[in-house]
Amino acid sequence: MWLGTDRLKETLKDLAGLRAGGGGNVFTMTGELSDAFPSRDVGVATLLDIIEEEFGTDGTLIYAGRSGLVDLASARRLGGDIASANWHATASLSARLVGDGLFVDMGSTTTDILAMKDGAVIHQGYSDAERLLSGELVYTGFARSALIGIAALVPVRGRMTPLMNEYFANTADLGRILGTLDEADDQYKAADHGPKTFAGSIERIARMIGRDSGDLDEQEWIDIARWFAEHQLRMIHDGAFRVAMLLSSDPKAPVVGAGTGRPQIRRLAERLERPYVDFGSLIPASEDARNDASKAAPATAVALLGARHLAQMDF
View (cartoon, rainbow, N blue to C red):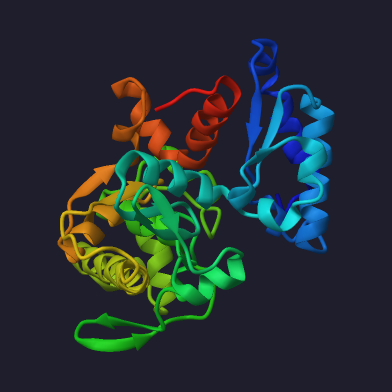
């Protein structure tokens, strides 16, 4: 998005085949926070203009979070509800299907953590600023997060070593080294625009501590990557502890995991001593489609909520 809205328009044109198939179109957004726009209000208004231009108004709905699904005319008066409401869609659908539990969606850059109780999503914050304060938004993700944003020190041969304050490596490098990354989920260039390989990721992490990859053996680099992943999990665990205070005391209330970072969410469920449930297993889809549905959980959720809204369907 920060490269400009022309890139978005090009992408939307690729969806022409879906539009030709008929039916409704339902949208949620998060791009209004991009630095392509001077403010979130301008971002919401611009994105709504693009949606109307490409999809028209007939059968087009916008997810407005606490205000539900609305038409384009109504959406223009609900910018505060629409802005970055994608988390609300997925958590709300999960709450309807699970009842009680903790919903965690870890994408490429952020992690959403919401309590679900009695079939409804319970949240202390709504805007990004409010959710950062409540622990419901942890700004760390599975692919694009800079490692300097996770820690300031890392143990190297028994000594806590300061990190270079540079964007030399990201969390996709961790997953690549540890074998938890699906390469299809890393859609951004590597920090150095270099090869997305095991060796390339080690080279990038080595720069974080002022070293070359040959300075340590392979297992030592794997241990450093594992330490970063552990430190990131602690960040998410801290947020989950705060949010879980809103839950009932039932220890069987599960953690529902969504997003590309589900390997970390499974580890989180173990830490919290709660069952893990994959978001994809909750929805009406084939086995082959459930993995993709979990990765693109907000899109999946608004599609199902929109279908229910348009056809008055019950799950």
